[in-house]
Length: 66
Image 1 (cartoon, rainbow, N blue to C red):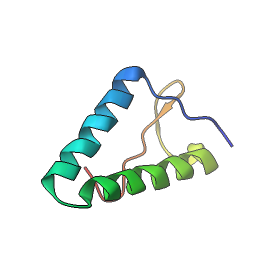
Image 2 (cartoon, rainbow, N blue to C red):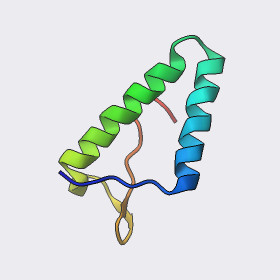
Image 3 (cartoon, rainbow, N blue to C red):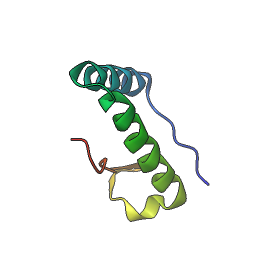
């Protein structure tokens, strides 16, 4: 299984996004985090199925959130 690393700005963005969803609707922030966790597990199990956008960076959109 591969390790997933986030730049500090990406971590900050994810925290802000989860907070925004949580403020928008009860439970939505948790659903965003669950969708993110599922996507991260999929990346770890098969990163090659996601297109590369740079040398070691793959694009993997979330299923339910833009």
